Image (cartoon, rainbow, N blue to C red; front, side, top):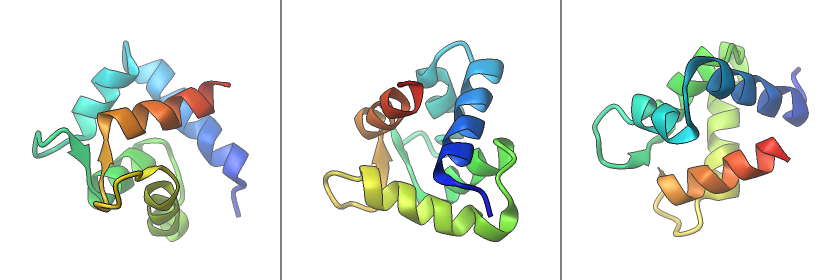
Length: 89
């Protein structure tokens, strides 16, 4: 199974190699344009980052659990930025 560091590295590689900015990546995966990423949208991001389908749902849940500061079960742009800042360090 992938470690947290492996998963975060794959996300960083996806964003760095395929988008000019993290905000562009966020907007790309925000399918409905509500400026929040749902679990489904996060799973799409993880799929693009080559995270195994077997663990994609678990990882999406953990990302929401770890970064959703207002408990709406969604990741806002600000929450996404916090995650990206952590990944980049």
